[in-house]
Length: 359
Image (cartoon, rainbow, N blue to C red; front, top):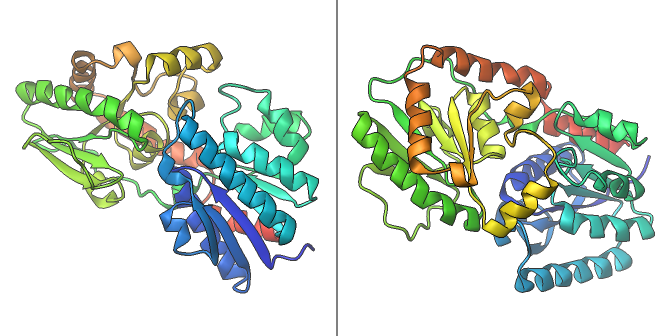
């Protein structure tokens, strides 16, 4: 068995960092003497033995700016020197393909085994990335049940470990709507997306306030908010799961937050607005009919999706009112809860750590 005294782990976004932290904790439980060095964010920095750079706070989506490009190039050069001088026994990469494929290629040259946890969404776009990963990765550790067939078709060592959110996100048991409905507003985590979503969310809340006697809570990743918020909208961090469990409905982007809300059993409308350039490019390369993972898994539109031009306050408000007034509200909530079974069994981070350390 390969020694596990030195492990390098890298993550590039906020949602992935949560899973990176849980994985590191499980590795330390199994092997307390393991020296873990990392690239990631501030939360990961607190629990590893050696930390290089914070790339999480860049909040990259779409094209890199020149500043971001040269910064990541500098980080990559720093890692290459480190891997050459003090090669780790194993490397763990979490999602974030654009940067990690270069890390993996260099690790391959040095014959350092690479474990890729949380696959890029190659099934949605740019399927050619599968073959590129297969050339440089020792094992893919997958969190969606349909991904293993794709990798195994290309004869790549892959295993479905389960989705780590099932160990983090609680589920609701009471599906009755509050007498004064509580609507959660989720602008997203990436700064450029947040800026596009907030005006739309505020206008939507204003429309809904005239139609129904509702409460509004906006959930943000960070509390350092410099935008004037209407007095009828309260502010909470998205980490406050207890407060999130209290909402009856969510307006949120696709991605991790929509899956979290689904696992709780919270009906929602998914919205997404991009720059015209990013939207045009994504429309050209995207292969899936839907953008929300629950809809993709079920092959039907369980959750309404209002994207780009359709993500306007009137249409969003209409979607919210339609679902809140629907007799099927409770059935939809329970249908969302049922998806937990498709995402594996509890103990995902522990199982992933065991596979990496024993491989």
